[in-house]
Image 1 (tube, rainbow, N blue to C red):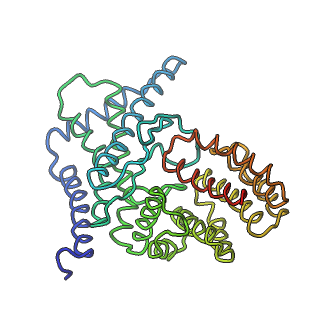
Image 2: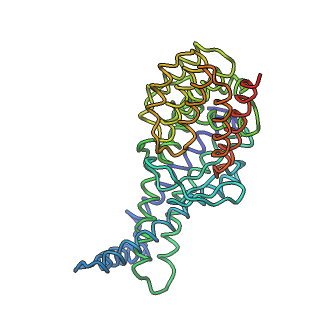
Image 3: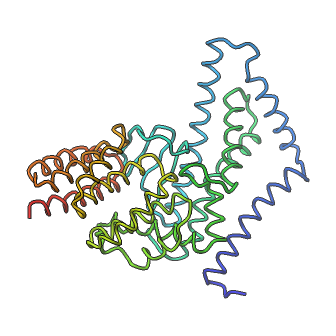
Length: 377
């Protein structure tokens, strides 16, 4: 039996609490059947049946989907805001939050999200500030979202007020979000809250990899150069290679460290791993890897032919429009056109300055500054 205060003890306590909550909800619904649960379930079923039009027209279709979209937006907002609020209370630093297409970035910057294909209707991005009891605090942050959805359903069921179409659809979406996010699953580049929680509590290596990834990003946010990232965190980040989006991100961080250390063979191996697992990444991450491959071949290998091939693979409609320009700047540098390369870097800087995400913007600008200094030298 582990001593109280050890990581293993906290892991078992958190695991017991999590399954205890699920068991409690299941017991209440399946065995106890309190009156408000029975009446609420009957009302929700009847309300959802009534909200579906029997005769469809343009007006009814528009009304139905407007109400459904509004209910989904509010439910997702509650889910992601709970992650953010509890995460900050648990010692994490808020980075960004997205609800549908609406994105909120630190410090109070609102924009429209231009990416696609992530498989998620929203996210809450937080980075660890403290390192103590990180597993427990991460579990609390992850549990906050689905529990907030389930709590909002319970609260509305207990309140006495005239419930209409919006209330019914909001409770339906909230219930779906709460239950589905407690189920361990992965969709595209997204792992559910339940999947993350079980990973932290059951699979020590994969849990430590995810936490190491968050720590490395936080170090880069603080201004630590890629080549000076903590070796212990990098070792945990690349200790596992599997079919997951975490593999892509972790090996990309290790690639950045090797690239700026001018360890070209190691950087090539790490980048090849990222590209091999790129199908698990989001479209913007895949585009970034293609751009990195072009830059690496041009700047480190002086293989302009391969760099141009990778440049052609970078989507022109990428979420970050400067990615093709990075490849072009690297090719100009490799062919001796330093003036042209510097001009491309100026174009890239102007585009990066408009990025709403503060962490991405600051890290990208620092790397761009180093590249410009190398060209001028």
